[in-house]
Length: 494
Image (tube, rainbow, N blue to C red; front, side, top):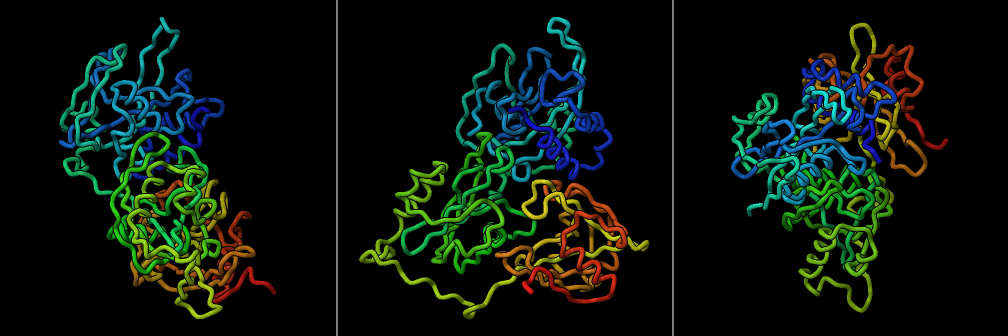
């Protein structure tokens, strides 16, 4: 199945969120994305089509170049997409392997660039009458990888297209725009492991696994049983902070003790590998009582169950290796399961999720709303204020962080005031939530799309003419704020 316009559009939007000053020079690509009927993933769309390049950096900080016989130029590996490619990054890795013989498993996406290109270049291609090809544009998306293997990787050139390879220092990279971006990265330093996962076990010898959503090309290991975890974010001081934040965000889990177990390499759909720090933790709870915000389900499995699951070999091996290392005394005796751990909260207590919301009002009275992404797990294609969940931080710190991360807005603590609290339940069976709405009396910056996979548009709205597709509790809160009321409740049974 060809790469979708949505996948290409989302990738380009994520790139422009980092490089907004390049919007004008990428105008031809944006125009092509806006045209209906043009398959810009196809090499036979001669109004312009997408190509994918692979920027590979070795342990010495040198960048891989190949001599393309057709053009006679020394360039980074790359080429056209194919219908079988599941993502743009996968197309880049396929081209790397075809042109040089370097397998996808030999490289690792540079942290922070797993799905976002380092550079996008638009250049013209001369007409080729012999092939019936008119002159056209290439929209070249270039993805950044580190050659992670310490041993020399054998090179097998695609002789009909490639005449040789060369590892060049960054200051001799052929593309000026690419060279400029690479010079800003610490390429001489091995990138720090940027992902962390939790290997959670109980006293019955079972392991907690997470069935991931089936979104090929968008997430790692789609539709497979995996470990809870994710990528490091700027606020994470250590990878332990990363895994704790991910456990809280994905499942509402807070484990007392987490122990480093080692670093593993996981393979994604594209075939590349990503280093993951593994932490182990003991928990004897019922996963059915957890509120899962990502994926399909959480469940316990013994190592002997793994052969029946759709699970990566690396994850299966990891579970078995940890099980083999556990003392025999940890196993249940006489077939009896151990008692559940005593909960720290009193009987009947229900934990409430704390959400922080930004009420941003311009002098003309209009308020800021964002249109959530169509694939959002919560309120897809619906307007909402800028918001987020509290992590290991106070609520105002959360507000300041979310405003910066989501929209590039800078807010000072002394300019923040609480204007409303809404205690709500979204739908029956969901945990109760406490929504804190804070007004920013002053701020700097204009709203930018910093996280286009979550929000596709920012717009200021007249409170008297709010959009119909607005999150219901947000509508209530905005009306109460206009009336000067501090508290409201929604979703609770009468």
